[in-house]
Image (cartoon, rainbow, N blue to C red; front, top):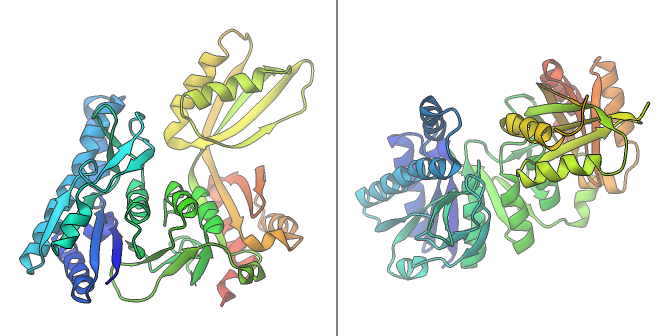
Length: 406
């Protein structure tokens, strides 16, 4: 008997037919003698609908109330999934995040997990029941409902797998695994059989929508091997695990494109120690995540500072910077959302030279101008014009011959 944690995303439970399909799949695992814990997201489109409804009432709704609202999406899905299992003769019980023992910090809309008790999950499993847990949500130490941010159901599943010491963690989604690029952007992208935590983390952080970055980070920290696979067929997916030596044979494993990027430029910033720190300390305090950063050489006592943030954070970021620099006259803060971030990722970069040269050459041959560059040990990212994003992703994918990977 194995203890399996399965996560089903919004597209997998979008309507009654798909919820019933999930129920049948879950029961098939139980019939094989396994104990199954299911983590579900809100039905596809429900979260966006709730957000839109909130903003019709108040363009800037309180984050505490947004958590109360958005937690409803998963509550609906867990109840419907339990009902679908009951209908086919499988005992099941639904649990909200706090009932499953998810304890978080006090940060609303982007809470971090600080503990998982599991609640009564093991007792329910021992009774032969399937336990369906609401992903994306928990409760802080003051008893307030919190949510974990977009994609938080992935994190819920991985965290439960770690907390319960599950034998297997499966992330069921609308794609068959992790691809060398988003197939909707690059039609000839290929599925990867195995990928390292580090590569998956970089791809997730750089815009790949298959997994939430925090969930991959959590899995790596706690050694949770998981599989990303389709909820619509029985084909094997992609195993995400610790790096093994053979992974370095592939120089570039994947290309990620993130079109949810905005660029902020602070002009005429005093060119003296402490001003950049002032900007980024304020952004950190406002919980705005900054990605790429470029500062030019100061001239005439002033410099320009440019950085990127997620589009969702643009107004909060601009307001934070303007407030932080309100005592500096002549400083201007401008922003644009017409950029995209293109990244190439691969653990093989550690032992192979020339990846940057190849990337820049490919982009130059396709007349794609580079606005900003950032790197890590296994990743190179460039900010480019949004209009060139899809063309550039296809060109880079082909240029590194990723369609030919075994």
